[in-house]
Length: 90
Picture 1: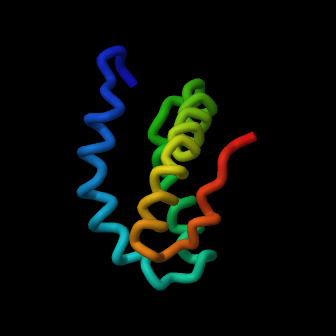
Picture 2: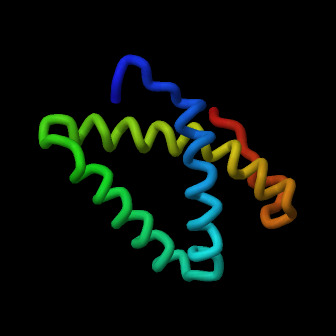
């Protein structure tokens, strides 16, 4: 990641990829969807030099954690998740 990294720009750009992948994972079992995401994560981590892999993993997990409330909100709005799934962190 460079100093001029723009998270919002990367997020907007990734939206198109996510929309292409989403229909492929829809209807898969959690095990299949999870192992698919795990393989993609492994590709991402392996693409970093060994000294950077741990930091890349932590950064990606932190990013995903930050996006969970957004995704839950979208799921609730779409009617695919109940409102009580919107939880607040303690």
